[in-house]
Image (cartoon, rainbow, N blue to C red; front, side, top):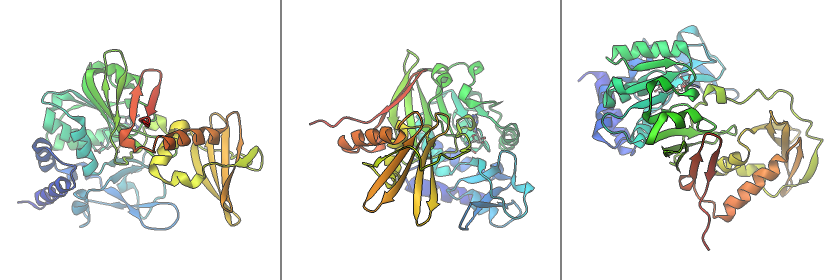
Length: 377
Ligand SMILES: C[S@@+](CC[C@H](N)C(=O)[O-])C[C@H]1O[C@@H](n2cnc3c(N)ncnc32)[C@H](O)[C@@H]1O
């Protein structure tokens, strides 16, 4: 057996043992689709250092490259919207903008998508094309449409897909608009995160069809959601759990922070809940539901840290700091951000702080609602 096939066998065994890979059909797809063909342009490896994250290229002529293609890790393939591994000597300190998602998450999502033979699937975020290839293997390329916002990324994916013998419908555009020319889909799956389920996805999924996407916020807690579309233009479902995170769809990225508020202004009070509560993933997710377009930054100050929460567009802010045993909050702008977050967290705690996999999500063209089960006396 060739070396890369052995690596794929090993990966499939690990993903099966980890519970990500469950069905024989997806196992066969994982064994037959060579991930390394989608990483021929190399990838960026994180450089361990304190301070901002650095990235260095790993190219196919390096011994580390092939085994890395079969680890259960996300491999970054583009940085700062244009930079690919062959552009760089040394390190780069900018943000990743495209990657090959870790195979464990790819197959978990494919299993969660609950496809059947002949299901027509729209994928948002083609990336390297690896997950697109797995879909083609399982469903046939005629049933797969994949949208990528970045033309160069899409071109590279098309090339890699052709190498492994697939030619699905690849579209360059904003996946948040879906692709209405493709008619109604049985499934929509997003491999980039969204703040809310776009109305176009609701309109382009057949009644009874499913949408699988990671719902995010700008405090960077997120969770995978699976919704079933009803016949009235809405969809409802559950969060699936697992602390899933994805790079955000580009139109949903937060605005630059710009000028920070003067945290000596505003109204001050003792906080009921401290900023440290949001170090916990679930608590942060619930806080984010109350303030989805709020960003969080930490500003070191003397021997203290200010935790600043800022809704740039609305101009509202809250700044918290620890005051001995307690937390103090100052708030300014048109809205009292921290009051909103505290109220939401208090209700959730009073309901027994249920886990995210118990949350329900309802999306309509106008609104998204995420709720937790009420506690029964
Ligand atoms: C995590 S990567 C996708 C991984 C991919 N499924 C794979 O297996 O290689 C996310 C991709 O979503 C793309 N993306 C971001 N915003 C998008 C949007 N609005 N529409 C379509 N694609 C988008 C990014 O350019 C990036 O290539």
